[in-house]
Image 1 (tube, rainbow, N blue to C red):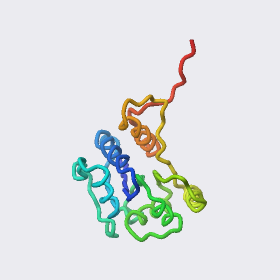
Image 2 (tube, rainbow, N blue to C red):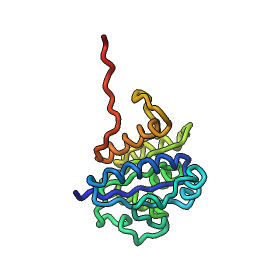
Image 3 (spheres, one colour):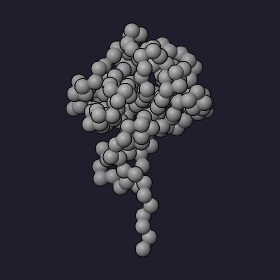
Image 4 (cartoon, rainbow, N blue to C red):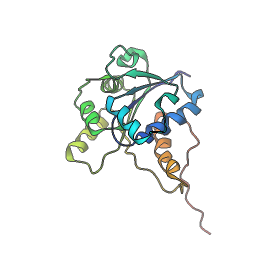
Length: 190
C-alpha cells in the first residue's frame, strides 16, 4: 500500500463534499499510505459558514498551510499518486490551466500534471462561461479529470447526505479507492 493522496479544498460553495470525502477516506484507510489536506483561506471561511457544526479538526489528516511551498506535495519527488480538489473554484481551475502555481493547492496540481499523476477537480459552478469550458479542456488535455459535483438520482437517495455521497463515491472511484458506493444496475423488467 503506497497510495499517497492530497486533498485540496477551495472556497467554492459545497464544503459538504469535502467533509463527506474526508469521512469516507477515514473509513477506507487500509487503501492508502497517507492523506494530506491543503485548504485555501476562503475554504476555511466557507467551511465555517456552511458546516458550522462540523469541525474541520475532527478529520485526523495532516493539514498544510496553503502558502507553504516546503510541504512534500510541492515536489514531484515526494511520490503522491492522486490529488483531489473538492470543491474546486473556477479561479483555482483557471490558475491550474494557465500554469500559475501561486499557492500550495495550485503548485500541487501542477506537480500532478507534470508527473502524469491523477488530478481530479470537483467543480461546483453553474452556469459555465466559455472561459471555464476552455480551462476544463486545457486541464483535460494535460491529463486531469474534471468531475462536476453532479449527484446521481438512480441510487434513490434517502437524504441529502446520500445524494451528495454519490459524487463522493464517484470521486473515490476515479482516485482508485474502492468504496461501497451505489453502482448502476438497470431495473429488471418483469
